Amino acid sequence: MEQSLFKIVRHPISAEDTISQVSRREAGAITLFIGTVREFTKGKRTLSLEYQAYESMAVKMLSQIGEEIKHKWPDAWVAITHRIGRLEITDIAVVIAVSSPHRKNAYEANEYAIERIKQIVPIWKKEFWEDGTMWIGDQLETTEYAEGKPSKEE
Image (cartoon, rainbow, N blue to C red):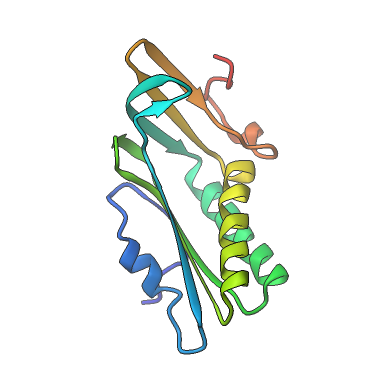
């Protein structure tokens, strides 16, 4: 059974599994981005996060990002795994692995991937702080899919 390169999961993410999906003999570079839950954001202490997603659309958008990368960097392979559910400080929220024959393309494609995730993938996080909570989502094109989700200002 072939594993999907683009996944939304509810369990801890293995960076090694994501790397293995893009490892190949032609690759002279593999870049890895690991997004983790940090304790402080803009001076506020975060206790935990809760990620939610419109899962089927999120996987489609991750796949679209993969296609965009393939168009811009034809020799690059990319795998993206994003976790949803409750995450604690230092937990891994997202892993992006990109392989390419050349390091510059791998770095550029990896940075492109995380920026596009924040722009178009329907994933929202609720930040739990010492003094309150807030839903956060930066999506530019998919906010109409946020059925039942509070606005960013709420």
